[in-house]
Each structure stands twice: as C-alpha cells, then as structure tokens.
Length: 323
Image (tube, rainbow, N blue to C red; front, side, top):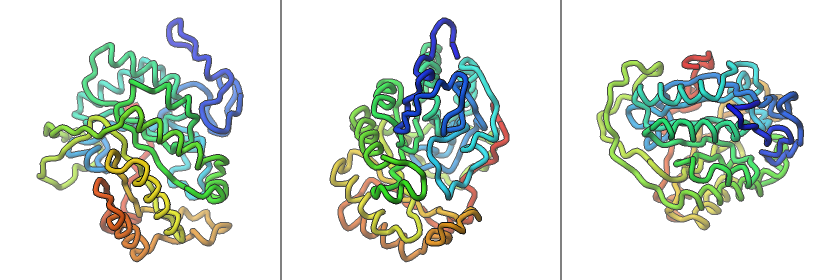
C-alpha cells in the first residue's frame, strides 16, 4: 500500500499491537482480519459520546472495520470482524475529515483505528497541511504496542482509551488479549505523557439538522475538550471489584490530570452460553457502588451514565454512510 511515493513499511511486518503477528498485511490478514487497505464502515456526526466530546454539535466519528481484540461480548461484530465496510484511499479519508468538519463536528473521532495507524498518521498530516481546524481524537481499546502510540505524538489531540481489565486472566478469557494489562498501562501512560492536561473551549453552537443521528435535547452550553485524555471503563457483570481496582489505579497514578468515564451499558449479545457468568446486564446496585467508590476516593473529573443505557442504542447503523 502506498500514498504517493511513501511506502507503509510497518504493514509488511506488522507489530502495531501486542500480538506482534509479523505478517505482511499488504497481502494477508492477521487476527484483526484486516489487510493494510483502509476499511471504513461509517463516517457521521455522533451525539452520544461523553459531553465534552460530542457536545451539542456532535463528534465526527470515523468507524474503522476490524479489531485486534476478540471480545466475546462484542456488540458490533459486523465491523469488528471486518464483515462490513468500504475500502478507501488515504485521500478519501482526508476528504471525509473535511466533510465532517463542514457539518459542524467538534472533532475527528477515529474509532478503532488501531490497525491502520501508519495510514492515519499520513491522513492527519495531509489534513493539517490543508488547514483543518478541529482536534483529532483517537478512540482505542488500548491494546497497542508502546511504539505505535509514540508514533502518534503531535498528531493526536485527544485520547479516548478503554481500560478494560486489570486482571490478566479476564483479558484472556473474555477478549483473547494476552498481555492486555501491561500493554494498556504502557499505552495510557504514553497518551498522558503526550496530553498531560485537559484543555477545554466553549462550544460554538451550529446547525446540525444534517446530522444522521438525533440531536440531544439540551440547551446548555458545553465545554468541549480540545486536548487531553478520557479513560473509559465498561463495568461488566460480576466484576465490580476489578472495576474499583481500575478506578483506584487510574486516580492514584494520574489524579485530576485525566477524566475517567464509567459506563454501565454492557448488554449480552446472545452468544454467551459458554460464559454464563457475564450473560446478564450489570445491576444498578453494582454500578451505584462503583460510582460511590470513585467519589469516595476523590475522583472529580469523571463521567457516569444514567438511565437504562443497556436498552439504548449507542451503536449506529454500520451502513457505510458518509464513506
């Protein structure tokens, strides 16, 4: 795969993630089920990220196909397994960035772009050379090699990483991700090194009548993040202790320099008969306990979900809209 005369040599012996498969992804697929060709399933304004990300105008999400995780509870297997999407050039990706900016997006939200980091770097550089004026956000599972994250230094303004597990046995059982805990810790540490403080700016309210998803019913002014790190954790059934361990680890290490987003939207996908311990929704009692614990240890910069989020659709239709 080339862009002009620039070779994407990192794809020829792929070691972007801790699997270090070493495959030549210009000709073969790896665990992530993707070759080096950009595979994108959707590009649109998304209204349901954290308030400082979506605001009222929306986050300009670009959903990449494929995934280097193997989560048994995955809610969007159609794209994570590479079954849906359109193959596009790096120049088309750059055009998509500007189309989202023209629609009023607060940022360009690169969702699960872990497998395409070399190409994403080139696309960001091209967009900035053309004068794009909104931040770039990297939305990731954190299952990345440290060098991959370092290669994004100066290009990514906001990191939105997951911290899924702090117990290695759970990472292996539920996501087939050997070495996840250490990899995620190193990756997040590098993200915070690159973006050591959270910087906000008052949102400029724009007409989002052309958004494909419904606008949130709010008249409040919103502070939009321009730089920083928001670490997400999805509470899973029976894993309250692990969730509290993650919150404590993050707060003791980073304090108020990051935001912690605690989510309760885990929804069984109908394919968990071999994992009966997680084949249910998270209880309100456990989620309330997690939120209370975060407050008790001093977490101030955080987000929580309200309502019956497991019944809401936070995942849009992956129909190649905007691609």
